[in-house]
Length: 464
Image 1: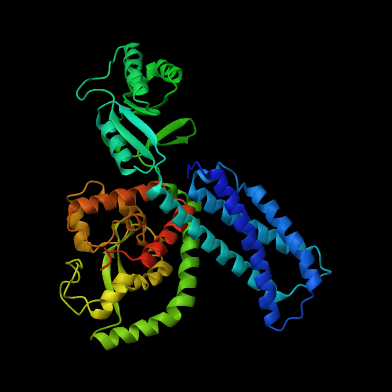
Image 2: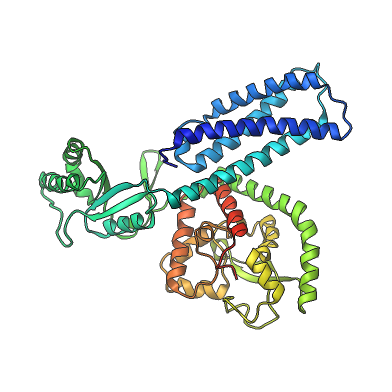
């Protein structure tokens, strides 16, 4: 979220958060009174002052409204979550050490529920605001690349895929012209290219150079500084290492190089993800599936013959197969384990078309989440036949199986869901699944959940 409107946005969020905090307090007070509780108004008015002071202390402690926090939307989610937890902890602690006041129990129950709901809606709106900004803003960094090599080409592809942030102006050097290898020559050659960048008013230059050319890095940086151009050096690493982020770990003083950063290798990260899975799946089953399953089950039965639920063996973590559950959306047929659903598929029932369009057919997979076969967020699981098909034609396809499959995923909320007739579409999905694996965070999962709700609400033409 590197917006030029960062500070106005922070001010807006400060005001809206105060409205949520105070609105939640007043709503809890009114609801408690509606239950028949005898509330002393003056006492609760005094408590409101303390309530706001604790909120201010909480947000300052977690640096929620810090400009650095707003560089990334996930940081805002993380800090918001921390602030709310700290606020409620301190608020309850205030009463534990202040036993002279008889606070209403319904009030204490209503308050955190309304606060969480309020901040959930607020941050969902913030997610939508980011999407709107990225689609409509014209504020971008002008960038160019030095180094027409595999790494430079991949970097160019990255800029092309992120046009909302970068205005890519091409390569400064000529195709096929090698970067000088002799000591000192690289700096001179770079200075010539930087002069060309300055003439074109380019703000940042990314140099994809070999590790041996890093010895001239100081001279390159000095030349760029003198021309007021930001120079970024990107080592051109050959082979598999050029395809992923390098990860360095140390065993005592021994550096161990990995070609991929995997946050979920950490036991603490896996515990957080599992806790989120259990919380979301448990609440959804209790408050949604408990009454929705009988209704959908009856409609499926009235629409066509067959069971309410459909189960299918799919590829899971470490390529171990598991039974994946869905609401049945097709007539009973012999091709369900080999042929993907397609647009206007004659096998899909009328009720099934509705379930697929609204993604309600996936809800039984919450049971898979409770069982531990799936996660709320992760790469979508494929039929066993498709796993065998794509592993032969798409490089890195099996990497996505290092994670538990998910009900939704980064690929799905960025436009790559549904049928994949074209192998290139599957390749794009795999790229996003691997990106998710390498960039996982709890706040990224929450962001994807928000985006999934948004995609379902607005509708997706690929949902069929």
